[in-house]
Image 1 (cartoon, rainbow, N blue to C red):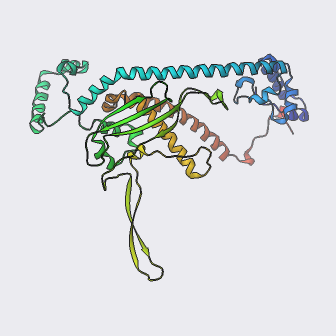
Image 2: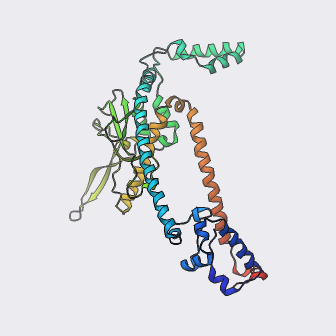
Length: 402
């Protein structure tokens, strides 16, 4: 229901336009819940001042605040609403148990997926060569049927030339499989630096491990590396701790499990190979003697491998650094979820670019909605910017208000 200003109507007196507005208010009031209709719009508005009453149940431009609605509810109705809210809390608790069982199902089925992911790793690294039968794919058959005989011969000649320059025994597995994925996916390429790429060429596999039954809900990302000249670790880990219980202070905000914290690991870098820091030289002048000396200092450096050293911040802190850390944590949680839900299960589709199509479409749809909202805002801003008191049109003659 639109906001109503009783004072404006009472001072201006009723006119043609006002009578029309009054009839409209009556129609809106008639469609409101009985408990609200029991009170007149005028009485409710006077009780609240000039701010008016918003549409009960949120059926309008602005949702009604329960405290505002509660103030005009009969006591008996208010008691029943409280009973419904207690039922809602019980629903949230049941939903929490549901998500706990979903987590257990994910853990159970991850054991079934793992042999397939292990086979994927072996093919990528060249440990195993797939059979001809395993390499058959429908698109290959379709392309062969469509190709003309001369094109086939030309392709065969070109393939033979490539084999001469790059013998098959030298080309193992799928080179730079995971690095290609990092380069292709926006969410990952934003974190990727040029000095990270030589290291990620040694990335063999990414796995997801779920917490065991009876343990706090969590999942761990494992990045498996082959021996390299950058660090001694063979596995880098990132643990994401989750919560699947309604918050006692705000149980109605519960919408399922959420990541509440994360913990990285210590990377055992080889000397001079740590890409998360860089060395800078700074000249210092002695105040007394006037001599100048050069001091070297290590400062943080942008790198994907900062992912394994997540920011820490207190949610209660208010300074800018803590706010930045909290924002970084939110992005980190989103990235961890993205690895778990998309990258690891569908790695080959991100390698070929096929998975990006569906993902980009979702992003585009969200972006289109935001752009439409922005356009609306711009139109409003333009109206404000073009406002000229001299050109302002007078109100309709039939309904002038003082």
